[in-house]
Length: 253
Ligand SMILES: Nc1ncnc2c1ncn2[C@@H]1O[C@H](COP(=O)(O)OP(=O)(O)O)[C@@H](O)[C@H]1O
Ligand SMILES: [Mg+2]
Image (cartoon, rainbow, N blue to C red; front, side, top):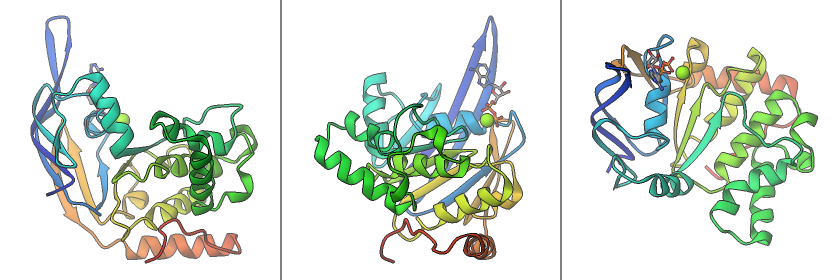
């Protein structure tokens, strides 16, 4: 079964007596292990789509199956549980807790999942090591660069070992060299079975995906497979030029 299956998903926003369709009868299948970019101009429905995919919001009509479970009509409590178990989120603005160490930030989803403290600490340090930040585990967000903060956020997304990572404009607050570095890091997840879906409006960031969806007026208007090898190689080159060692987050491949 595909990891994600949307059938005729529509999302309506009502204001007063007018109604606006931010998603219009969207059909979409994403298989496990895919690396997908969603692009499209502002207002085309990308964030609405991510909110539905991320179980932060429910469709007005249509079906959504995630990881073999029907999630279109769950309660808020059930949705929160599905999110914690199934999805790691990466945001444009990192969304780390201030005055809280990197290790504690990464531990948060494990607290919600009721993992005992010693195991939380071990897994959090392991996740920070995977993103190349083992030496920064006691640093607070304000003591880290933007790129390092986004690495902490990626560690936080990975620490529960979810089948799906969702990232809405993950490089939107980063300079271009750091953006390539972060996309190179995410690309290392390929081949591990994890599925990554990210939103971007920048062509050089979308180039990292093996499949690119384009949205317009609440619909997917193009859906193309693409060869991302050149983008990944360029990011690896840029990374090697600025650092001695390339952190690996994918584990054994
Ligand atoms: N909560 C909301 N209430 C009313 N309209 C909304 C709401 N959220 C988004 N919209 C509208 O839905 C459309 C798609 O928005 P969005 O999904 O944020 O697009 P994108 O992320 O591609 O810029 C826009 O026209 C936006 O104004
Ligand atoms: Mg948006």
